[in-house]
Amino acid sequence: MRRFLRTGAGLILTAIMLFPVYWMVNVSLTRDTDMRADPPHLFPVNGTLEGYRAVLDQQLPYLSTSLVVGLGTVLLTVALSAPAGFALAKLRPRGGGALSFILLMAQMIPGIIMAMGFYAIYLNAGVLNTVPGLILADSTIAVPFGVLIFTAFMSGIPDELLQAAVVDGANRWRTFVSVVLPVSRNAIVTVSLFAFLWAWSDFVFATTLDGGGDHRPITLGIYQYIGNNNQQWNAIMATAVVASIPATALLVIAQRYVAAGVTSGAVKD
Amino acid sequence: MTTVRRESRETAADAVSRGPSGRGPGRGGNRHRAEKPGASRRHRGQWSAWAFLAPVTVYLIAFYAWPLYRNIELSLREYTVRSFVQGGAPFAGLDNYREVIGHDTFWPAFGHTLLFTGVSIVFQFTIGMALAVFFVHHFPLSATLRALFLVPWLLPLIVSASTWSWMLNSESGIVNAALGLAGVDPVNWLTSPDYALWSVIIANIWIGIPFNLVVLYSGLQAIPAQIYEAAALDGVNGWQRFWRITFPLLRPVSAITLLLGLVYTLKVFDLIWIMTKGGPADASITLATWSYKLGFGNLLPEFGPGAAVGNLLIVIALIFGLIYIRIQRRQAAGS
Image (tube, rainbow over all chains, first blue to last red; front, top):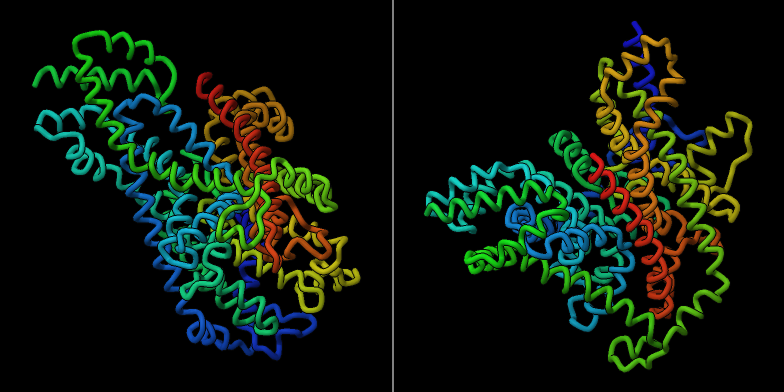
C-alpha cells in the first residue's frame, strides 16, 4: 500500500517537474488567435499544426546544419579521445597524470571565454561562420570529458586480453583497433551521445563563431525566431519541441549509458 | 617473445598499483627500472604511449591553450575593431582590468553572480537531495519517473530558456495566470529590474535539479543497507535516520556535487542571455553575460574589457575547480 502511495507522490512530483515541457508542447499546438487568451488554455483544444508547418518551411536548413555539426563533433571527439584514453589507462605514459589534471581543469573553463579566444583566432584565420570551425569549437566541450570516460572505462579492460593480442604478434596500434575498441563499445556510445547532445545544444559557440554564417545551427534558428517574430510562439515552441528530439531519444535509447556516464565523470556544460 | 610478455605483465602490475587516476606510487618503480638494461624498451613504450596521446596533446595546445592565450593577450592590449582585424594594438598592461573593476557594472555583476550561483545551488541541492531520498525507495514506476526527471537537464538550454520566457511572459504567461487565480497581481518577471534576476534563478534551479538528483542518488545507493537495518533495530525514526546516517555518510558526494554545481553555475551564460540579455538595465547581468555583452553584445565591441572580465571569471572558476580536484584526490586516497 505504501509503495503505491509513493508511486502517486512520484507521479505528482514528476508532473510538476515536467510541467514546462508539457507547456512547450501545448503552446506549440495552440492557434495564434488563442495565444494571448486569458487565462491560457491548459490543453490544446482547437489545436493546430501551423507551428510545425512553419518548422518544416523555415527551420529545416538549421536542423540539418545541427545534424552535420553534431556528427562531425562526435567523429572528432571519439577519434581524439579514444586513443588518449587507451594510453592513459594502459600504457603508463610519463606525464600522463599531468595531462589528466589538465583535462580536468579544461572542463572548468567557461565556454564564453573560449569563445572569445576562438573568435579572435577564427577572424584572422578566416574560418569564422564556417561549419568546420564550429565543429572544432564544439568539440572542445566534449574532448576532455571523452578522455576521462575512455580512461575510466579502459582501465577496467583485463590486461590478459591485451597480452593475448601481443602474444599473437599484434603491435600496440593493432591491439588498440582490434581488441580495445571493440570491447569499449559502451564507452564509445556514451561519449558519442554526449558529444552529439552538447554540439546540438551549443549556443555560446554558435552565436559567437557562426552568427553570420550561411549554415547556422538550430539553436540560432530558435534564437532568431524569438528575436524576429515575437507573436508566433507556436512556431517557436514547435521548433523547440523538434530541437528536443535528440535529448529525448538519448533518454529513451540509452538511459543506462547516461547514468554510467554521470557516475564515472563530471558532466553538463 | 617471453621477454615481451614479462615486460607487459610488469606494465599491468604498475598500472594497477598506480590506480586509474594515473598518479601516485609507481613513479619510484619507474626510475628504478630505467637504470636496468631494459631501459631502451621502456623508452619504446613511452614513445608508443605518447604516439597515442599526441593528437589530443596537439589538440589541447591548438584549441585550448591558444584561445586562452589569445584571450589573455586581448585583455592586455588596447583593441579597436581595426586593430582587432589587422593587429598592432598597443600594449596596455592591466588597464583593461582596472577599467573593468572601476566600471559601474562590475560590482552589480559580481553581486548578481554570487546571488545567482548561491541561491541556485542551495535550492538545486536541497530539492535534488529530497528527491534522491524519495527515489531511493523502490516503488512501482520509480525507475521510469526518475528517468523522466532527467529531461530538463538534457534539453538544449535554448529550449528551456525560451519555454520559461513564455511561461513568465507578463501578459500571457501561465505563471501570472496561476498567480491571478491565487489573487496575486501580475508580476513583470522578465521586464522589471526587481524580478529579472529571480526569474533566471528560478529557471536555472529547474535545470540544475536533475544533475543533483542523479549524483546524490548514486551516492545514496552506495550506502550499505545493513546500516539502515541496524538503525531500524535501534528504533531510529525517518528524520533522525536522514540527519544522523544518510547526510553524514553522503558528505563526500555532497561536497563534489556542490563544487561541480558551483563551477557549472558560475559560467552560466546562455540561459540569462536568452531570457533577459542581462537586463533590464543590467538588473540580471552576471560576469559571464557581461563579458559576452562587452565583446559581442554592442555595435562597438570592447574585446579588451570583455576578455578581462572573462579572465577574472576563469580565476574564480579555477579556484573552485582546484578545491574540487583536491577533495576528489583525498577521497580517492581514502577509499
